[in-house]
Length: 252
Image (cartoon, rainbow, N blue to C red; front, top):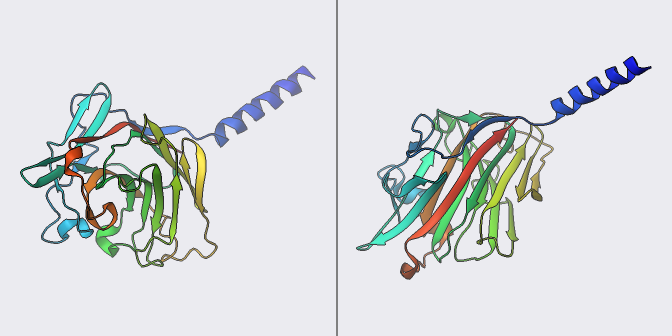
């Protein structure tokens, strides 16, 4: 009898472990410099191919608007002599993932005109373009709408518009660090804020136009200024402002 109990416990333990996601990749930003074997910088204003980064954004992206210190990555938005600057980094070609729990722990900036984000693009973007490649916006915040978080999916079916989206008021979200994540499987994508479910996308008809999410995606961290979504009005008195990232993690 005792042997049967031991076997049962072992089988139960193995099944439980298999059902749990395991940490497969993380960046805790513990060094003094960004790991350029993982992250690449996107620089400039997007011109000549994508001026304003496709959204009429105002900032120029540089390598000088970020800092690693005390285990934190800080992206700083600045305004000097009429020029807005910030930083944008991605893992394209270095760390790309298909399915899993993907999360960031971050502290948001404050101010009208700011647009920090943690998001993902399909790895086939160079071949098929956007939005057919798909886009997963795990975290978007715009300073013109305080205490509000946007989670959005862009697809060819929606012609790039935000029809698969959720907008939630989260009181005090600008205070301290919060965790923004997705749980992505072959069937659906769930969006979470501090492990609370806010939105699920579960289409029945998974054509490539509706569901481009059956391929690897890469991650992007940035803070835009102004633009179609960030808003035409920018409060110049708020600068500098910081988007602070504690970690990025992937579980599968």
